[in-house]
Image (tube, rainbow, N blue to C red; front, side):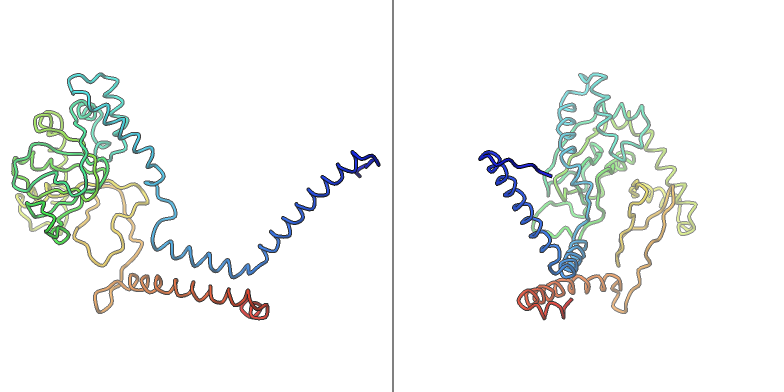
Length: 330
């Protein structure tokens, strides 16, 4: 119980407290009316909106979450590798190694080979649509792709007038190593490599490649050849063709839970599991026109959601104008 004296000071204090209580009660009444107003309608609208967003993007994208950290790491790596190879200290090489361990191709190298790569590597940045490797040229280096995406095309030109989307032989993703096969076989570049987006690369020149990476990668390609030879589908193939196929393979590493082959009605690759296990989570059924049934149903669903949202908005406006129509809708 609050004791109020009859002095002027006590009366003023009571007025202040009464105004505060009045304000709090008013806020509570507004919030209560908002919560009870068309609760089902607002929930359905939210649910349909989220369904529409799920068709466009992920709820959580780890690349967006770590964007700032990646930019800081790139700047630090660029600074460390700007030092000439013969002047890099042991501490600088160790720091480079720690920054590159997130790269899948680099992570799979032995520890000693990693240190040697950090000692001789050159950091490079390319803008989108820039040519990295030209078809028919003699190989002078191999590359680790740190960030970005590249495409391998059959064209030997980088003219923007040509449609490279129809000539794509392969897509090179972050964490891949490319350009090493031509160095090992001492042959000309079989394809042109273009930047699909802005990209960061780690370059190993030919001389350093032969002394640092050639021995390890040669053993790995021999292991891939033995794996292909053991598969029944390649039993009729000659050793020469199997060796050529092994050099044309792209060795890629996936974490547990990652989609190796997305649900698609067309694929240009054969995937061979070298180690680990993969589960088939979806069997794609095709209609008579060669279109995935799940894909066509997903497209229909995406077109129906906006229609449902617009219909819901119209009903909501009607319900706000007429209490009777609101009760009928709910």
